[in-house]
Amino acid sequence: MIFGTNGFVSEENESTVEESSLIMEAAIMDTFSNDEIQEALENTNDVDIAINQGIVMEKTIVRLDKKAKQNKAEKMAIFTLAKERKDPDYKKLVNIWRIERFLEAKLDKKYGAKAKTKAREVMRNAAKSKSKMVKTATEKAKKMINVK
Image 1 (cartoon, rainbow, N blue to C red):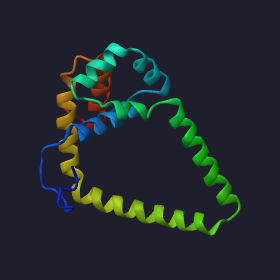
Image 2: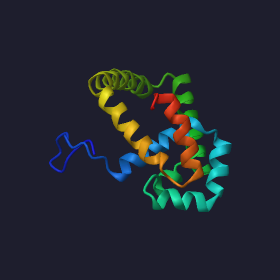
Image 3: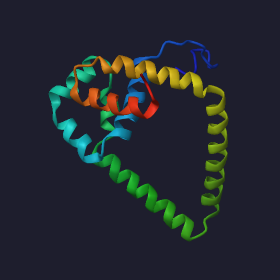
């Protein structure tokens, strides 16, 4: 967890199941196409194994459904219309996104090495899974982050 119970940045190196599942979600999203993800989700046995081993969580999987895709398309349409009409709130939002990218780059510079180590650890643990989908995603993700 990034923040501890007191609201300050936690120095704990232990990652929670939720953090690990979010890292695996990112790996799955990066390594599989939407069709491959849908196909993998239809294999309930494989998904149940991954959930029981604590590699992914049910709420992680929910993000991949059709409704989420529809919501994303609607949001993009909202942004397009606001941009076309030169809405002042849209200009503020673009400015906030610019600040967000700056802050993310700053955090990346500060915590990037530790994050890579944590991601490698999660990948090593996930590689031991009995779930075919998770193993495939792990193998592809390892190639992307150069885990040996």
